[in-house]
Image (cartoon, rainbow, N blue to C red; front, side, top):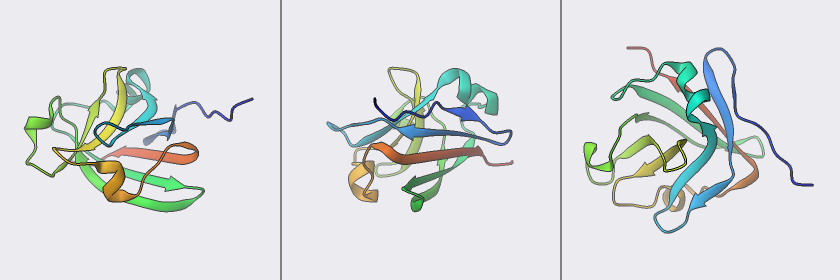
Length: 118
């Protein structure tokens, strides 16, 4: 049996895991699907505080803009987008997010995404 944690909304943030990476580009794909993400009432251009941990140890924390296309941020800039499976994903425009931040996938990896107040 595979360890699996469903994504969920905790009242102020959405929480999920990293089941896989887009190895070709280094994008980080989460299991936070669009219906769960929608509970944060996201609008394109909003900013989100993203925290990624492995086995309880913080690996990455940062503020990412929610955009539709990579071209909406500068070369090398981070972004949050919905991938082709309509799941929350993180990337660096024209660079490898996973490699830069030493992020992998599997049941020990967790993600917390919270909308930044305007």
